[in-house]
Image (cartoon, rainbow, N blue to C red):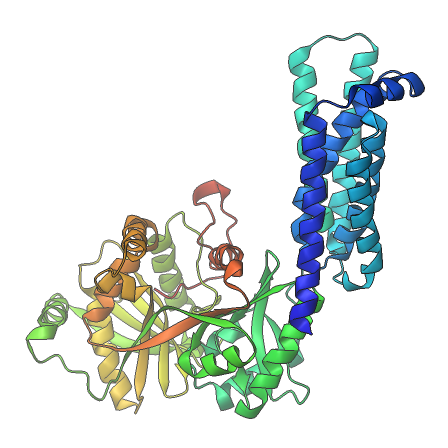
Length: 524
């Protein structure tokens, strides 16, 4: 039933696009001479020419609108009906094009017949910017008309105003068709529930990051499980595995998917474990491996042996230079130490914005259960790791160091951290998540993989994917796959862009970046 319904909206969207293509083709070709002469004899001068321009404009808009129709958006249906009617009238007014008009009427009848299927509401938050944009567009268009009536012949000015009016028109359409957005709101009661569920069921190394303040929560009816998510660009991005009673997870995801469909959102599960993949596939989602998580067991970690010689040398060198290691709970950080930690973060970050969403905390100091592993020289902080609790140990949320410190400081911190974690009985430490590690390590099996590998290496300067992989391999970790789950493979471009945005990987550096007022921590 669901597949049939989705196929119906897709057909209607394609039909609307076909009407648009027909309108464009008709506007760009000559009319039949006898029909054209009849129209010119009946209608006032200038009307057929204006109708031709209208047919071209309506056709282009219908093509753009077709995707929103396929997504069942109610506002797209409303505008689509108006455009098809207008295009039908334009066909008749420009040259009695009965064939094109008949096709338009058939599509109009189908849109009216299946109007109840277009049940996805528009975004109420777009009302104010939409009104402003429409007023600006109307004012610009009116200015063009006034200049023309007064005999002003400034081609460049008129062209500029016409271009501005066109851009404002597209902006208005974008706002009108924009899917429902959701502002992140977390009540104190929700955070209390989430914190308790994370403590009881947070065996996933990403579970604690659900406590970021830029995530919304969707709970099961019993409030014994939840998903943490954020809506970006029409995509509901779920951060990691759902947390809570395992028996409730399938129904929780099914209900959340239903809510996403009712609001016109694409559903995507980010960085989920292999244990969740069968549940996701049972719901009809497609699972794609996107990388591996590097996990080290403190009980088996050792600085002995040739394979870890470079790490051992770094530790020895840093100790000889006077660096000392200590761990401080976030709740025990005093003002002086906090200023030092924030100084290191600021120097390390430079002009770049803070990054992170699914694998980082947005405030280092708000959760007393987190820890700072600190490397100090004569009382001055040279670098630190930020750790959050996970089910069987700790998860690394940040790696920061002063650029003036010696190379090997991170190796020193992690090696000392393993000894500290072993003394506390921690079973594992989640170090990093290495995206597309298979492509970076394995020999490409086909030209597509070779092209993807070249692209990843080309972008390594910005994203540091290969360098992170090389660094993580120094500690001989256990590699655990992580997956991206989407409803359709065609959603990947939209989901990919939304993921880059939510992780702040598409935010420009420098004065154009919107800096956040709280201390963030990317998961390196």
